[in-house]
Amino acid sequence: MECDEVSEIDDLACIYVKQSRPSNSLEQDARHGLLAAPRSMPPKYFYDEHGSLLFDRICNTKEYYPTRTESRLLENHALELIELTKPKHILEFGSGCSRKTHFLMQACESINISCEYLPFDVCKEVLHQVRNEYIERYQWLDVKPLVGDYTAGLDDLHRPEGSCLYVFLGSSIGNFNLQQANEFIAEVTACMQPGDSFLLGVDRVKSTQILHQAYNDEKGVTEAFNLNLLNVLNDQLDADFDLNKFKHKAIYNEVQQRIEMYLVSESAQAVMIDGLDESISLNKDEEILTEVSHKYTYDQVESLLTDAGLHILRHVEPDNAWFSLVLAHKPL
Ligand code: SAH
Ligand code: AVI
Image 1 (cartoon, rainbow, N blue to C red):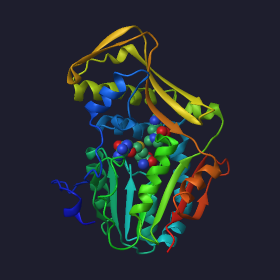
Image 2 (cartoon, rainbow, N blue to C red; image 1 turned 180 degrees about the vertical axis):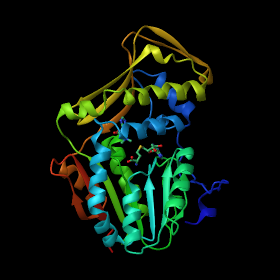
Image 3 (tube, rainbow, N blue to C red; image 1 turned 135 degrees about the horizontal axis):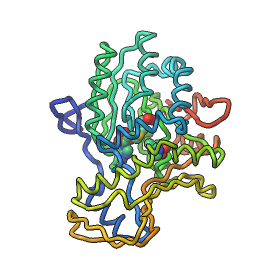
Image 4 (tube, helix red, strand yellow; image 1 turned 45 degrees about the vertical axis):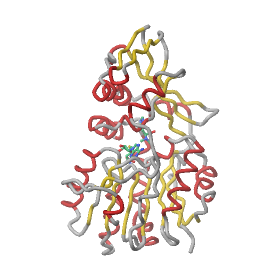
């Protein structure tokens, strides 16, 4: 990665990725999403330091099967994926705690491939932790965390020299609508050189009951994660949301094949948002859409990649077909 072309570097070796197109600030997104009807907020704001920790706890709940399922696929197939790609660089979008990337690193280690790891996330705190953890665990590994918003354009994400494996796990692709998902894959493809690869993890359509439970865990961790968005707004926009006056709602919309997550106002209430110099009046039961999480069929997963001109090398799934892990490459 040519750092000087990309950005500034901080004292913990994080590289700040330049936005290649303007993206909204929290203030603009909140103005646009909270003053409008119906109300909504983009999901990237969940992930302050506490939100990242809560997401990691979601991954440990018994109901949230995606992490366990994808981990098992990686555990069983990482070596084959690494042998097929032999990466010099592994660049991971929305890497979070990088808990599943260990399987890729262990596979590299087992066949003596030493590469560079570029975790790319909007949450700087989590990147610092990952860097420390990874350099301690893999002494042969170079870790260059990339701080930034992957929805803000990838033009300034210059391709490193040597083969690169781009990774997007956890079905974060599902947090885009379908058009955004296609645009994102096209943007990643544009960054890739012929021969580079893309590893994508995607959650599949399945029974409504399983999906409902995954986003409504018994211990209320997903509820806490959803409500944390209001803490972010209170902290960063000087708002006075009372978390006790909202409840978590997550439903599976079968027609649109997506989980929809909302914060629901339990009573009629006014909320002051000093950072916007605005107050909003919410009706009882009024909803704020905080996240969508699209689920894909097998064919839709493949089309996502092939429509962008990528060629599928491997598509693996568990026996219950709950999740897809797909490796594609940009043809020579
Ligand atoms: N890939 C990990 C983490 C998924 S949680 C896994 O599979 O378990 C989603 C991660 O994406 C969080 O760490 C969040 O901070 C990051 N993220 C969300 N939106 C982002 C954006 N627009 N740009 C960069 N990172 C983003
Ligand atoms: C990060 N993302 C793919 C998760 C998902 O399943 O959509 C976020 C999440 N929201 C609630 N639970 C998990």
